Image: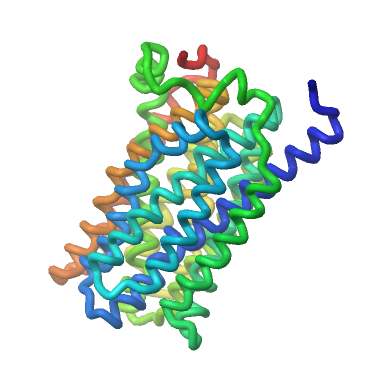
Length: 402
C-alpha cells in the first residue's frame, strides 16, 4: 500500500537526518581527524612521518576494497541494516583501536574501520536519500552531504580537545566507540527502505553489458578522475597538515582549527550548491570547485603568512566538498538512482589510487623536502580534469544497468 504523503514526508526527513548523522560521525572520526590522532600517536610511539602517513594509505586502500560490500548488503538486507551493521563494526573496532600497542595493530584496526565507513557513508546514504527524494534528489543529496560535511568541521577540534585532556588518544577512540553504538540504535529506529527498493534493488546486479558500458563511458571516467584526484588532495591535507604547519613554525592547535574551519565552510558551501545544481550546470559547478581546490592546495603548500592559511580554509573547504556533491548529482542525472549508486561505489573503489598521496608526501618529508612539493603538485593535477569536465556533455540519463 502506498504511504500517505505526510507520513512519507516525515519518513524522508527521518532518513535524511539519520544518514546525515552517520556521515558526520564516519567522516569526523576517520578522514577528518585521523591526522590529528595519528600525529599524537606518532609522538608517543616514535613513528616517522612516512609511518604515520601510512595509516591514511591503509584507510583509503581498505575503504576502496570494501566498496562492493555496501552494494551487496543494500541488495541483501537493505539500507537500514547495512548502516546498523556498519556502526556496530565501528563500535567494536574503535574499542580495539584504543588498545593498540604498535604500528601494525593500528594499521589493522584502521583497515577494519574502513569497511565500517563504506557501510554507513556515501554509497548507502546517497541511495537512501535519492530513493526517498525522487525529483528533489539533487537538493536533498546536497543537504545530506552538507550536513555530513560538518564531520570535517567537528572532527579535528573534538579530537584535539580529547587528546589534550586527560582522555588522551586512547580515550578518544573509546568515546567514539560509545557514540557509534548510540548511532547504530538511531539508524535501526529511523532508517527505512525507499519506495523504489523493491524495483531498483541496490543499484544493479554488478554485472552485464549495461554496467560495463556505464563504467567505460567518458562521462564516468572523467567523474572518476575528478573524485580520485580530489581525494588525493583531501587525504594528503588531512594526513600532513598538522606536521606540515608545525614544521613551518605554527602550532598543532592552529592546524586542527584550520581543518575544522575548512570543513565548516565546506559544509555551508555544499548546502548552497545543492540548490544551485537545480539552477546552474552541475558540470560548471564541478569545474569551478576543482579550480578552488587547486588554489587551496597551492596556498597551504607555500603559506608564509597567516592570511594565506585563512584563505586556504574557504577555498579548499568549498572546493573538495562541492566536488563530492557535484559528482554525486551528475552520476544520478547521467545514470539514474540505482545506476548512479553503483557508479558511486565504483568511483569510491577507484579512489584507492589516492592512497599514494599521504605515503608519497611522507617519503618526501623524510628525505628533507618537506610536504610542500607534494601538496602543490597534487593540486595542479586537478586543472586538466576541470577542463575535461566541461567537455563531457550535458546530463542525458541513460538506461540503468540491468
